[in-house]
Image (cartoon, rainbow, N blue to C red):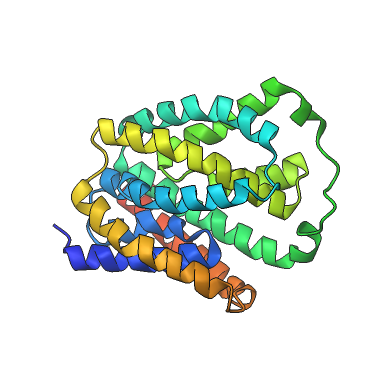
Length: 260
């Protein structure tokens, strides 16, 4: 059994990254797996800790007027039930493959962090890119939401790493609108993911509770520090770290699976 102080420390590290950069939760599963937490528990146990942060952020954004509520509702119409299906499918996919997929997610998130830094001025402009026509077809939005919801449930990560680029590049929202709408959707999606993973026994509460004890306070502290530090200057280094750790962790898991 991994020591509780180490799990608390892991939660604190993830919370600091989450508060500073908004995507530190991608580290949660790899860190817990490297500490010796069983695969399925390493995937699902961070979820309860991430819920308070997502909920507070989603509530704050909901009052800014940046949230595209119609897009969020249609996305959730497909994503919420698919999230439950994805959560149930985690047992069928198996822990080792889920860890490999988590490494791939880390790579994707790192690449997105680096890309957003290069295209920050263009992406954060107040005038959006032309709105995609498919967004006005409810069925298309529900279908896209279902795909994202399935992945969010399967990997127990909320799906934010897919939602933001989808809303930004495929829909035509500005970066603030995409971030706000994504966080509201993630907040709602985390609830069925937590409930489903808890009911099927994937969440190890002896891991989830100390992890939350480390994550919740440090994420709140980091969010305050982010307003005082020039975090933008650190994003490039953070993106490189994500890509490096994600690539190494993915290669490690593929070797365990006998694929590489």
